[in-house]
Image 1 (cartoon, rainbow, N blue to C red):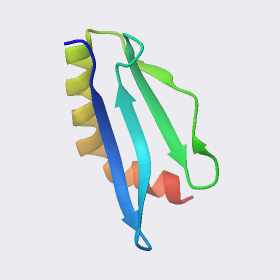
Image 2: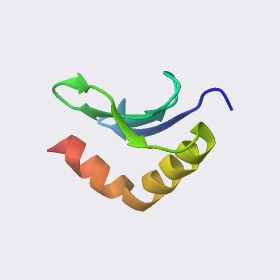
Image 3: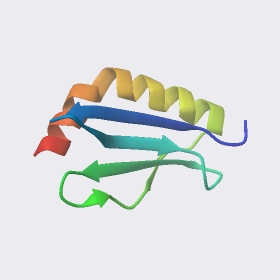
Image 4: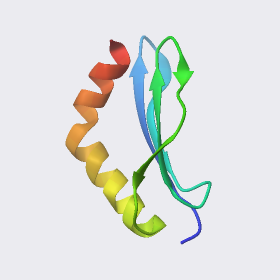
Length: 75
């Protein structure tokens, strides 16, 4: 695996909003939070394993915590 992206999106008031992005664009596992007012926040490393391991971890985290992530974006 050379790259991936896991994106959590929300349709709110007829608009598609990005809530969270996990990716391997820089060769390591990175997570970006998005906020309603501030947009894309600086990336942080979220998993120290391979990109494949990071992708699986990102999918699991999005499934497990998507409601909390959305609530954080709304606040």
